[in-house]
Length: 119
Image 1: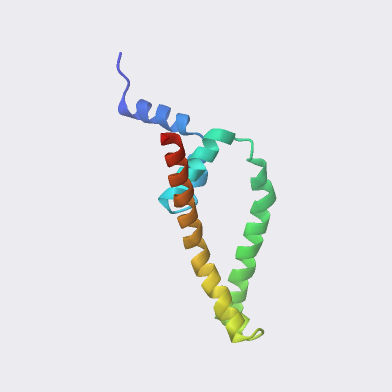
Image 2 (image 1 turned 30 degrees about the vertical axis):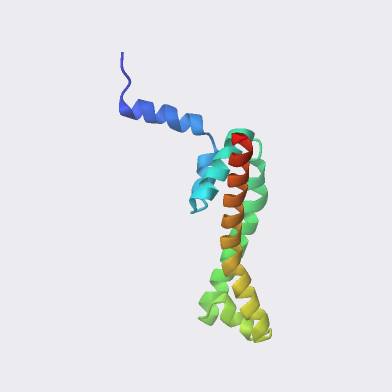
C-alpha cells in the first residue's frame, strides 16, 4: 500500500516539530535552521513564553501605530523632536545593522559546529 503525496508531506511536517513555526517568523535561512533545531531540541517546552511576550509585542505595535497615525510621521521623525539628531542616527544605524550582525553570527556558529563535528 502506497501513501499519497499529501499524507507523506503531513508526516514530514509532523517530524519537523514546532521549530518550523517559530522559524517562519524570521525571514533568513539561518534563522529558520536555528529555530527548527531549537524546536527539535526543546519541543513545546518554551511555548509558555508566548503568553509572556505576546502582550508586549502587541502593545509596542499599537503604540507605534497610534503615534504614527496621530502625527503622520514615523518613530525616528518623532524622536528627532525630543532627542538630539546624532542619538537618533546612531539608534537607526544600530537597529539596521543588528539583525545583519545576528545573521552573520548564526552563520559563523553553524560553521564552527560543522567543523567541530567533522573532526
